[in-house]
Amino acid sequence: MAKQDSIVKWCSRVRGCFKINTDAAVDKNNSCIRAGIIIRDYKGVAVRTFIQKIHVNFSPQTAEAMALLCGIRGAVAADLVPTIVESDAKVVVNIVNLGVVPSADIGNIIADILYLIHSNPSTVSFIPRIANSVAHSLAKLAISSTKDNVWFGLVLPAWRN
Image 1 (spheres, rainbow, N blue to C red):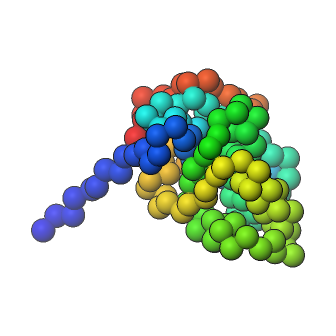
Image 2 (cartoon, rainbow, N blue to C red):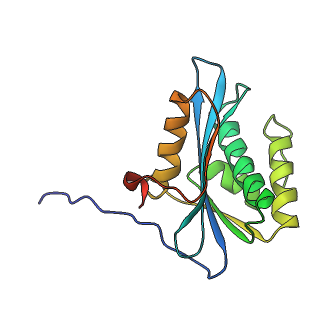
């Protein structure tokens, strides 16, 4: 029996909420991380899409936490709350949901995330990588980009799922 590929599509959760998907990529050649973030309304319409270069060299786990923080900051700055934040970084999502700030390098980033999600109605959830393909593609695009970019309401056709 041939294995069939399953198609995972974005689905809204709560009317009136914004959904943030984040992903990070470690750029070893330039000793920095790159974040890919998309914010959609409850209908799935992209309201902000952005890629960002962060000029520090973090571990992959800390990079994922930084991408989460950038996504939440971007939503709060644009008054796109309440939010549902999704990431394929299970360990980071678990740390955030425990609500305890670790003493490792990731601790300050987690503290900032916790402050923002407690100050603005937000939840943070794990999703499998296959369901996070747009943010993953944006993080990969960020590797080849020479600058940060923000698109208002734009999602390229290949990234609509």
